[in-house]
Image (tube, rainbow, N blue to C red):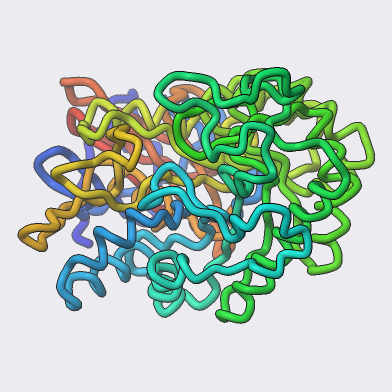
Length: 468
């Protein structure tokens, strides 16, 4: 990088400082994506020097596990529609260290809302021994998607959760909670299909069969050469939806995890994550954590309104790993405005202790960015399936500004001053500082990190990463 001398708006600063080295700078705007900018000159500085941002290099916070997205069926349908050369480019850009560097991803157990249609691994009513368990559906979509990713990154980590159990394990005997807006509970059932109740049949033989279902899933994927390292018992266990979903009470989850799922997963060497939490009610977590079920929980996952419970959970359980398990999904327009909203969410999650961050839809059809249940959503990549072309959306670059530079094993660093930043120190001791400017005006910043400082003017509507 070539050197640029900066005029720093602090009295006598240049005269008092000794030039020591340079900082890298990568910036994205609506006109220019992930562009390397001229190197910034770093100066040594004194302890009491006033700057806009102070990065406390001696105050290391949570360890970063990694970044990723979800292996949805519709993601593979769109990516696999590209010609082989372009498909390989997209996969490398997502999973290689030279690209997005996704290292920790999510997948569904059976159908989710971005599956081609509803399915589970066993729809044979009363098959408690799981004799008819099969992952054949996944061999068409999810398994080739994961294999393509692992071809680029052999150490890719994966966790999984169901959106719905097999339909015969539910009181309403339907994959959804609501169909066309109507509740799917059977009249008189104790599991009437709404938040705060159990849609899953609360009987021992069903709990045992469902825990076996999880184990069969783990074992079947291992035979495909794919290791699942962690499972959650239910995606959004409070949400009654028109797509695959299943409400549970915290009591119901406690029983299932403590007496059935936890022991089965311990035998298979798979961790259990409590989640995914999509409500701002920390007491739901306390109920599970303070019973036998809590002895099996190693992680807690938060998404959507669950973000408003994370601060209390981090305070109450400071030693447990916290995850952002799904980014909010937008409206399918993939706008810059929503990209900057996602940046605000990122800051919130990291500032409250999360160790990993998951984007939701990796890829969708550019002409129909919706699912089987007609909910248009954002994605990192949009594919024109008819013309076999693709484009990277604004949130792709926002994620890349973080995941490309912040390596697994990094630690978040405490910052002071302007709160529109995130800072990390990598295992190789390089410091990464991320900031975004959502306004229509340029923004000037002076930044101090340890005994070094720099000044920079960032463009309007820009995402910026600095590497020291």
